[in-house]
Picture 1 (tube, rainbow, N blue to C red):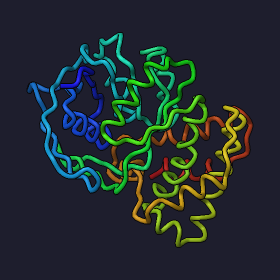
Picture 2: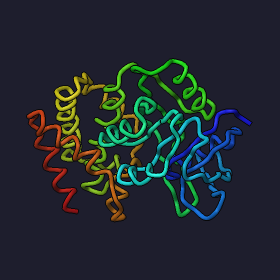
Picture 3: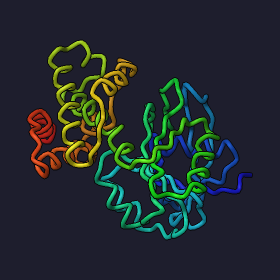
Picture 4: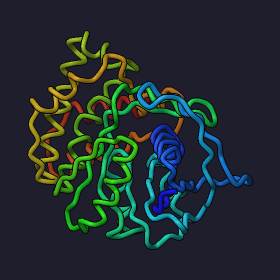
Length: 292
């Protein structure tokens, strides 16, 4: 049994995947899900890791956790944190967008890291099944800015044990925007047209809009967070993604669920107003999606 105890908030596609994989590596894994039961059984069906089943203990307060992975979506974040009493754990959030940063800083202070997770398609199918479609390991970026090296090493060791590719970068802004620029652009188009990435590639109009979103996002991130990303690098990375790629924002909007529209896209539009950056494509698409 591993000494480090892992807490999970949100047993969806990412949280469920992490929970099952870590339990399979003999970690004590607990989740904050409210239930009359003491354990919850999760089935993982993964093209990369294989298929197996794990039983995850339930502890609404996560008091004994040494590391807490936050994998819930932003609309559910505040409610999910309400009963968390742990004041010592390292907090690793895998949320999209910008809105969660202030919430987590207020709740956990310096114990909360700035992270993102990418190159992973994983979702919950039914009540207790996780479908992981990626044929590669997920990639995690973690900012080491103003963090202790010993804490970074612990988190990296845990992620390495489940074959997550982990990169440490000494820049909060780079970690925030490295993923957000491509994610918000792809999510905008897939959600607006309810299509996959392959259909975007086949359409001159959709590709033009995608590229314009990236260009506008780069201007906004430069002005608001002094982030110097390269358009060519973002496009080059997107070219490696499969044609079948869809987004969680798209799926949530189709299902009429609470979505991350505001934190993924609305927050960028707000920054364009705050910093007086011309972003007509972002504003147009954001307003169209809001009406769906």
